[in-house]
Figure 1: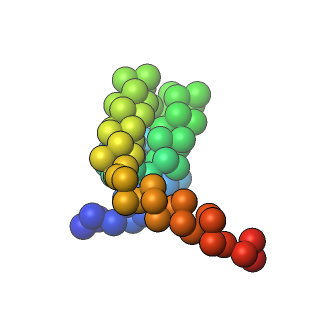
Figure 2: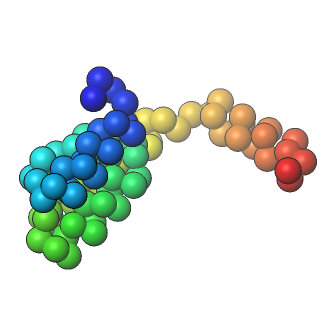
Length: 90
């Protein structure tokens, strides 16, 4: 829980399996705001079963988008392009 996005997501999964949807959504919101797309998708899927609200989904999506935008940088883009250009397809 101390900053590990995957741990937060996994806690959300565990709480969801136990039927603790409120707790699950809180964990998923935290990991979504840390840039973890799977948590956004889990909240979206919880909309169907009444485990999450549209507002919670919107909050998760916005938080995810902010996190992704904050992680963008020119250096990251250059590194990704270099890796693609120099990969051997293996």
